[in-house]
Image (cartoon, rainbow, N blue to C red; front, top):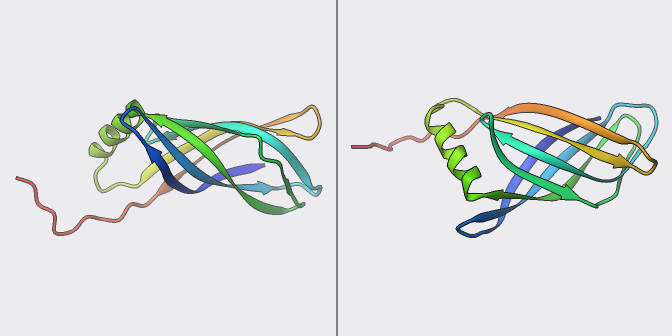
Length: 130
């Protein structure tokens, strides 16, 4: 199993907490269909804890195939502060992420995952600071 982040959307934001819709792509790298009955994950951005999520959504991923699921993730104001601090020190560099967690199968087994990647951010042009 390989799990990657496909998209992150803000659903709701308050001063102390933010709620996101995260699209995860799940790749089944085996020759048998894989039925998942829920799971949990933690997301780091730029090597800093950012948010966590859980889902009870069931999905079956065909053999040697992939599927996308949308899950909810929560972060706190501290996650945003850590993200901004990390981005200031990495100006012009891609945003790195690491997602780790586990999915439960329809049996008694759980499948851990731990994946990382990079997101290229658009360059700001014409912005000056004084």
